[in-house]
Image 1: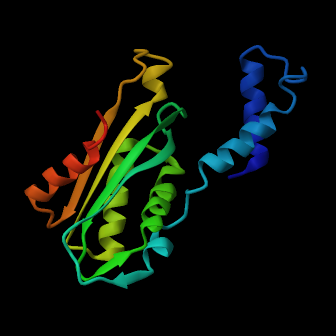
Image 2 (image 1 turned 135 degrees about the vertical axis):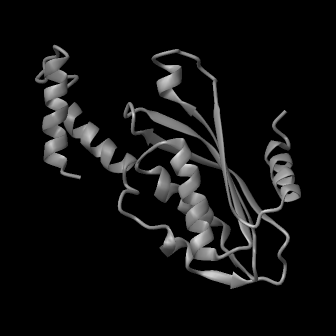
Amino acid sequence: MDREKVIKAVEDLLLALGEDVAREGLKDTPRRVADAYAELLAGEGKSAEEHLSKTFESAGGELVVEKDISFSSTCEHHLMPFFGKIAIAYVPDGRVVGISKLARTVEVFAKRLQIQERLTQQIADEIMRCLKPKGVMVVCEAEHTCMTCRGVKKPGSKTVTYSVAGNFPKEKKDEVFRLINENRR
């Protein structure tokens, strides 16, 4: 990211909106916005492989589910946030990864300009590629501020996407949805 270009672009945007960029409340805004975007888009160009490469032998192999992984991302269509929770389930094939690494994988893909459908797919694909499990399923439920703050203005509406890769049996899919929804009522 070219920080100076972002600062100039925010100044230009504020001027185009009729604002006085020299007034007290706005004079540091372009720098703050540049800092915010650097943080929001910190996953760009990063790989989750560094997080998923350290695995451990495991004789078990039924199902591993990490749910309620909170995330926030930035919609590439409106440059507005979307946020929610992700569940990752996989059927190991002799190896597992430390559970914090699943959350780190979510962050790599969430911290970039994104759409929810791609986010869900990228996480599933990378886990499949790096861990080589029998199968993986990723479920993402998110609220999009482009739906809640503008446009149709429907606060509280959620979008659910999921992606399955490898050999993930139907009965395990049903089990994952049951586990995700447990204690939500």
